[in-house]
Structure formats: structure tokens, C-alpha cells
Image (cartoon, rainbow, N blue to C red; front, side, top):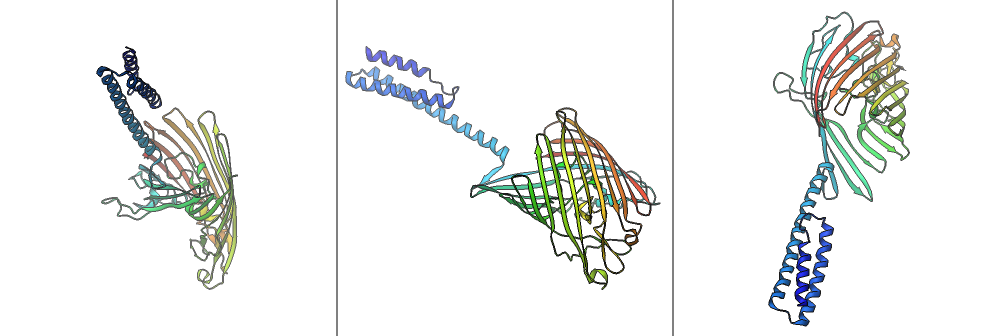
Length: 457
């Protein structure tokens, strides 16, 4: 009778063991306790000569326990697979110890632009985004509203991270299709991929091609144009070697490339560079605010091959850039950048003016410039935002060397509205006005309306 009472109690207890609703740890604990009770019962049954019914009940309980463990194991395996899929979605995938992530975006731009002092050539890079130094000036005939569709800004990147001696060795390769040759708009609109970035980082070191240390990418405004506030912006990607300390101080040596105005005007790139460009930068973050200040020193050099046998010369260029992104209210922000220097050349505004000019004797004179931009972004709600921005560039050209065709000033202003109906999808419209004036007093303007659709992945 005692054995029968124990059997009945154990059967009741086994009925309370859940097979799916309880957490895994709770199921295992209860099964362990139940098995311990079964073992105790079997020991007592051996001493009391149990009936066949008691033995059958114990066997039934053992089968129930085994079945419950199997169900729990299947549930655990399913949860593990779901977690693995979720982790893969967030963090890419692994090959051995290396984590691999794929990213980028697909973007379509529909641009309609008008210039008042000349016509842009068809299927030319200047029709894809603002290049300030190319705005036509003078008495040329006004263009109509010329419209182009393009997906060339679409980009793709792959990054990796591998633990090496307790620290991650990271790499990035990124491609897009901007500013490259193709078969044009007439048939298939195919364009050659180009390398944007290719670099690795380890323990504070960055080696490869990426954004120049002189350029604070985080300060760029939220625009549909490829750059937006181009006249007032540092914009350079190039091969470099950089070290960044944990305190935010960076030191870099970067690829040198001089752009020189030959006597009377024009542009040459001598390729006689001997010393790398040297950049020092400090970054500071405080809450929603981020600040950056950078300084650069560079050598500009020419030889007999560039001066027509008039001798070799070199000059020192230098400059500073300060920028910030400042939180305004709960979600808005103000972004700005100011730049000043002598011989900055290609670092500002996609090379609006050159770094130096040659005189008749083959001597170099550096060209000073001043530039900057400001942009305010307002977040209307969780799905909509707008940016208004303006930028300005001023050069101090030695006109007796460069001639009157060199750019004196460029400025632009823009406003946009961007709507994101679902995460990572941006639909937007933007209006831009830009104006350029030369040292000779000739001017011209550009108006542009751009509609874009962009999906990031």
C-alpha cells in the first residue's frame, strides 16, 4: 500500500512537469528532482517486493521523463538556431575566427539642373554632383533644365574583424561607380567600379586608403547631393598611415600630390613630391556634441621638367580645419566647419584652386584660401527630417601669375526634405543654388533640383 501511495504521488508530480511553457532551467530542475524520487522509489520497491502494477507505473514515469527531456532538448536547439540567425542579421557571419560584414546602399538620383552662363557637356561628371570650380561663368548661353537619372552613387563594402593577440584586426574594402568611365547613357548605362576605401586598423593604427585625417567626415551635413556644402568643405580620401591615441589625438603621414598653376593659368600635377603630407588632429566628444581640430603641413615641389628648364623649386603649404556637430534640443543638430591655410589646394572643395602658382622664372608662390559651411538639421518626427545649409570659399590668388580665370569666390545654399517610410529607406527632394566668380569678375550660377531614393543595407 505504501508503495502504491508513493507511485500515485510521483505520477501526480510528473503531471506538473511542463514540456514547453517553462524556461529551460526550470524544466531541467524539475526533471532532476523527479528522477531522484523515482530512484528512491525503486530502492524501496526492491526491499518490499513490488507488484507488477507498481513496476509498470515506474516504467511509465521513466518514459515520461525521457520524453520531456527530448522535447526540452528540441526546444533548446530551436532557440539556439533562432539566436544564431538573429546574431547573423546583426553582426554578419563568421569564417573561422573572422567576423565578416557586408554593407552599403542602393541609390537612385534624378537631377534636373540649369546654368545661366554656359552648358554642361552631356554624360559628364559635373552633372552628377556639385563640383564648384566647374560652374560656367561669363557670357555663355543659359542652359535649359537638363535632367539626368543615375544610380552611380550606389556603393558596396565588406569589412572583417579578426582577434589577434587579444585585439581586433579590422579591414574594410568599399567600392562605388562615381567619377569612372563607362559606356554612357546611350545604351546600358554601365560604369566601372572604383575603389573608395581599402584599409586595415589594429591597436590605434590605420594603414591604407581612407578619409584624410584632415577631414572630419562626421561634420558633413545630411544632403542628397554627393557632398552638399562642397565649396566650404575639406574632402579627401587617400592612402595614409595614421596612429590615434585613446585620448583622441591622431598623427598621420599621407599621400602627397601637388596641384600647380603654370604661369598664366591652367593646372599641372608635377608628381615630383618628395615628402608626405603630415596631419595632426584632436577629436573630443561630450554627450551629443563632437568637436575636431586638425592642422596640416605639406611640401609643394616642381622640377626642370615642369618649369621648362627654369630650375626646381619647392614651397611649404599649411592649414587648419575646425569642425563640430552640436546637438540642439532633443533631436536636432548644428554642423559646421571652418578652414584656412596657404597652399591647401586640392584639400578644399574638390580642388577649387591649386596649391601654388609658378612665376616666369620657375619659382613657386603658394595660394591662400578661406572656407567654411554651416548646416542645421531639424527632425520633424521619427520618419521625416530636413536640412538647410550654406557654404563659402574665398581664394587669394596671385593674379599676375594665375591670370583672371582663376576662381575668386564660390558659395552655395541648399534645403531638403527626407522621408523614411521604413527603416533604412530614404526618399528625398533637395533644391540647391550655387554661384562662382573669377578674379576677372566673371560670374555664373547653377540651380539644381534633386530627387533621390536610397536603401541602406
